[in-house]
Image (cartoon, rainbow, N blue to C red; front, side):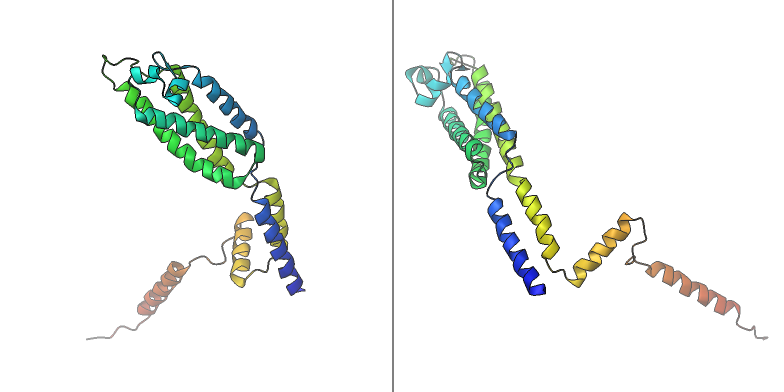
Length: 222
């Protein structure tokens, strides 16, 4: 019977591993799709001055005339890749894509902060000084998608939880694991931990016995 339980537990573990390939996407799907839609809108908004996000993306003459840096071009390209991954993740709920997306989103979020900073420290003589609403919006979207993907990657879906619960019924447990479960159950019920450290109490008892023994020793006359 134990062999059958181990075989069933291994089968459930394999099914759980297969189920882990999908994200518990839920309402996050619509949040990702909304971020993608807002990103497209942000490309048509002012990036800085008269420069739009599309100008930065395609490195137009307008972007070059307003001192658009390579960092800003990299930032827009990085966020574009992030949003394409977010779109694919929202459609497929694939965990491996989400793991890749976390790395890309982290890079694009850092690039976004640096791009905003670089626009803010430009001299007043530079054209298009200061980040525009499009730059701020796209930077915010990059950060939001990053957080959403992190939360998705670290969570389990409902099928994983059910399979894990079922697998634990058939997984053989060692004596140590059983002892730990007993301790947790005792704590949950408010009982004293059976493995509590009582060395101090035993030492106090020994000292009391020694003191009583010294007090009972007969006194000798000089």
